Image (cartoon, rainbow, N blue to C red):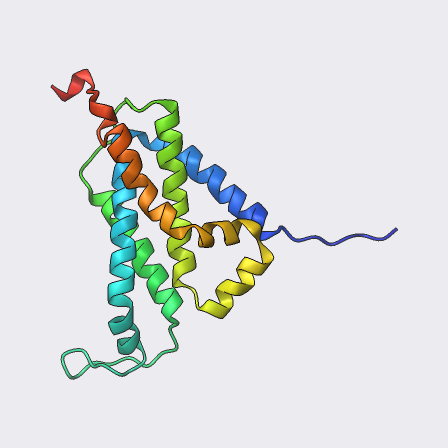
Length: 177
């Protein structure tokens, strides 16, 4: 009897990320899902802006206060990933907005949750070196779809907010008054 060894494909991993991300979106409630959306945008901005000077510091090219320098082999991808993740977690934890009973419809929650996952994946893939990214694109149709439509994922939440309204379409919860 021949045992077939199989490893999960990247499509399966990406599908699980979507299922977990959308499920988590339903748990987060209205305010938290919008805070997460904003923190994803902020994380992308901070990661792309600060990664180069931090990479130079970790490579010993820039000294802190002209006295402290570090020589390491930190990759630009890992630096961007840590900056992105740290920003998302910090803003999510320190936003001061507690989750409220959701006035979003099922479809609104599903849409925002799906787009949050798309933006997070778009960010991670945009941090990769082109040759590494190409390997993932070749190995997975879902990775190729996320990368190919990255501008759509970044713009779609803004369009959804304009169409549906950023605060549950203007609907208010009685506790808001």
